[in-house]
Each structure stands twice: as structure tokens, then as C-alpha cells.
Length: 495
Image (cartoon, rainbow, N blue to C red; front, side):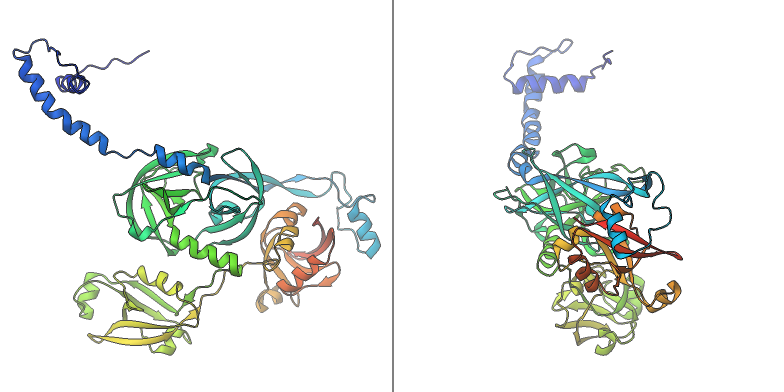
């Protein structure tokens, strides 16, 4: 049933204004003595209304030009549930033959009906965008994290299996690649030129609805979030929902200024606050991942905090600015350069530090081994220091096959060597701790927390040894895995 709406006099006047704008000059209002006077008043107001409407942005051309550069990313991951799989240890199976040939005992329960429990794959949906015609795509690291298989769907409905070239959890940026050429690519913008209040648009796949367009304004810039100190996020009020992750944020010139990454929500859905990774940050990460397989960042070894007005007054600063050093790590570059607790860093390589959130990004962007100049406030005066920049430790998890994309596709684990204390606790003299399991390894049942001790009867103690063993394993490999107090062989079909 249609809801009734009563029109107030103001609404009638607006309707008349619309009629006048359309050229209807003989409109009469019942109960009005001088209709001509009223018409003149409304007509005078009409141009401003039309002007305000024409000032609103039209995103249709942007969408027409840029939508083909946006892709849908579907990811299959190993889910938490385990289901009975086919028994790979049957006498007639390749693994059964493998175990017999090398005299390896069959793991307990392996011959039971229905086979061992296997991870039940789950599926996730995200977005991405093409940055080069040869199939290089940017998306979020959390979209492809733990993926067994990544499928990219283009605007022309073609689908490709993508290879994950690298991820960086600190910035939530991932680079994936599909085997295609002649693709439409985005134009990269300059987030530093973007202004608060400026119109922006997102294109992505919220809830799997491909190439959905939403628009809004930039609400704030250089927004730092807890545990995300290396990314000066662009905050917007663009509607972003699950599935938008990894999609582009466009300015009105059709240039990408950010990657939609996260939202603030109490319900799990959009609540008016969303965050995008500035595209210049993402492109630097992309360059490192493609060229080196990892991201290299600078560090100086200090813990900092914001300078409030009371703190500025107590230190004799004219205004609240800079980054206050609350701790200097022993034997760090900062300690060697003579920095102290209580120093306030006001500048880095000539760039002012107006807020403490500015410093981590500037330091991280500085090449390890370089010399940097620091302006700081100490004892009521500015002082100049030179500091040798160190290297920020990489994420603990390192792809065992980072140097060999083919090996990564074969096994698909992220591992790190056991620390001495961990090895002692586990009762081993070495091994590799699995921090992430994807692809063939996940399908075989290898999971996070397992310790890989050997491959095909040979011990492995480093990622290089594991990579070498997998490269030479052929179509199948038997991983000796310690899980808790038990040690089992896990057959992996690496194809």
C-alpha cells in the first residue's frame, strides 16, 4: 500500500519552482491573492536550487572509464572444520607406494575407513584493481592471507587463477598476478594532493556484488589506527562493506588515491567510517615485493608518544608538536647516535614532525644503512644529530619458497626456524615452525603450530633447506611433522 504524504506549503512552493524551471509560467496557487508575485518570488529562488544541484558530482563518466580496471577476487581457504577425506595411504595410491618404497611406517589411523580428517575449504570474496596491462593487481593482504587458491574475475567475465607474488601485513597490501595481457590499468594519483572534504568514489564487490559504486568525501587524512602506525590512513564516509576490501578509491579525476582496507563498525556493517591505504604507500610496498620478495624498512629503535600542550609547556616548547621519545632501545641506532629519553624529535631529513604519527612513516621509508639528519628539542634548545638508520625486522613468518614462485605453489607454507628455547621445549635439535599453511600443505592437513622436521627422510632446519627439498621432491613429498608430543609423516601431493 502506498504511504500517503501530505505536502506542506513549503513543499508546494518547491514544486512550483520546479515547474517554473521547466517553463510552466501559468501556475496558479489556490488561496493566493497575487499569484504573479508569488511566481516571481519562487522564480527568483529557482536558479540557486538548480545551481546547487549542478554542483553535485556526476560519477558516471568515471565509472564508465574505470570500472573495467576493477576485479573481483575470490579466495578459497582452509576452514576450521575438518571432514573425512579420501585415504591417501591405500596400497594402490601414490603415497602408499611411496611409504612402502622407503620403508616409512604408515601414520597411526591412516588406514582407517574414510581416510584422515582434512580441512574443509571456505570461500571469501574481495576486490582488487589492475595496475599494469600484463596482469599485475593490487589488493589487501588480509584478502589473500591463507589462500589455497585465488581466482580473479574481470569485468568481461573472464576468470584467471592468480599467483600471490607477495604480501605485507604491516600495510595490508598484497600483489597478485594473472596470466593476461592488454588489460586496462588504473591511473595512479597523488594522495598528498587530496583534500579533506573532497569527493571520492569506491568500486568493489561488497557482499559479492561486483562493480558496485559508492561515493562520499574524504573525512580526514593521516589517520593512525591502533597497531597500524606505518599507514597514514585516508578516512572517508564512502560506504565500504565486506567484499570492498582491496578495491580502489578514486578521486574525481579518475585516479586511484587509495586502497579500501577497513571500516569502523560495532555491527560488522558500514557505519559511516571507512579507511583506505594511501596509494603512494601501497606502490612502494608493491615495488619492494615485486623486486625483492619482501619489504625493507628503516628503524632507529625508539618508543615515542604524542606531545600534548601540558608536555610542551613542561619542555619549554612554543607549541605542541614533534615526537617525544619515551624509551631508547639499548644498542639501537638511536642509542648509538646519542638520543635520550625526553628528547622531542621535531624534524627528520628536513621534514617537520608536526605530530608523533608522522615519524614512523618517515623512518620506515628511509633506506636501511642511510644517514639521516634529526632536529630535536633538548634542554630548551634545538639540536642537530646524524643517525645511521637500521633495518626493521621482517615479519616472523617467511615464505619458504619466496625465492622460487614455483616452490611456493607446490607447498604453500609460511615458516620460521625454531628459537633455541622453542626447540628445547619441543625436544628437537631444529625444525621449522609453521605460522601459515595454504595450498597443497593445507590440503594435506599441515596446520599452524606444526613443526616441520624433515622432507623425504632428510632433516630441514632452514627455509632454504626446505625449499631445496621441495624443489627436488617431484610430485609428492612426505613431511615429518611434530604436532604437540607426536611425530607423524604427512604426505603432500605437490603436483
